Each structure stands twice: as structure tokens, then as C-alpha cells.
Length: 93
Image (cartoon, rainbow, N blue to C red; front, top):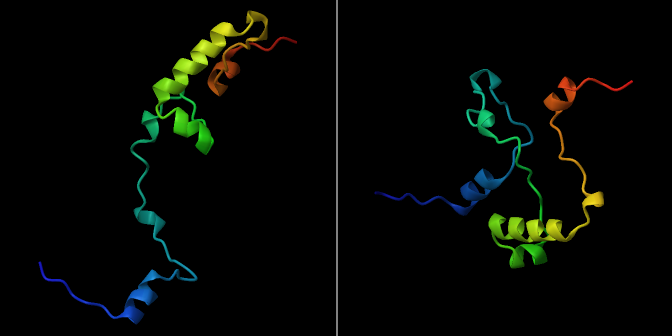
């Protein structure tokens, strides 16, 4: 494989952001992975110090399940409903 050298000024010019980009959205395709998202999963951002201790989702889930078992049952909230489930429920008026 033959490598070509580029001058420093050419490389700097290529690294800079342009003031405007012309994007052709007619060639855009839908995200083929969008339908594969599991709606029952929730993403939670952990602070850096916590993520150093709990490095896997299994460790986070294990400690949260242990914490839930120690909580009084009166403080537990019902599971969250998705927007489609709440739309199906008749309103109480």
C-alpha cells in the first residue's frame, strides 16, 4: 500500500469545520435499527464515581433489587405505563 504525504497546510484545512454544509436529504434512508429498541428498558446516566464501582448493568440491577426489598411496600409506586397503555385506559371522570 502506497502512502502519500500531505503538507501541514492541506491537513489543517481539511480538519477545519466549514461555515455551511449542503446535505442531500433525498438520499437519506430510515434508521433500520429504530424498530429494535426495547421500550421496557430505561437508560440512566451514572456519575463517574458510581460507574467506577458498578461497572456492569448486572451489578447495578442486583444492588437496586436488594434496595427495593428493604423498602417499605407503602412507598413503592406502580410501574410506569407507556404512552400507548395510558391511551387505552379509560379515564376516570
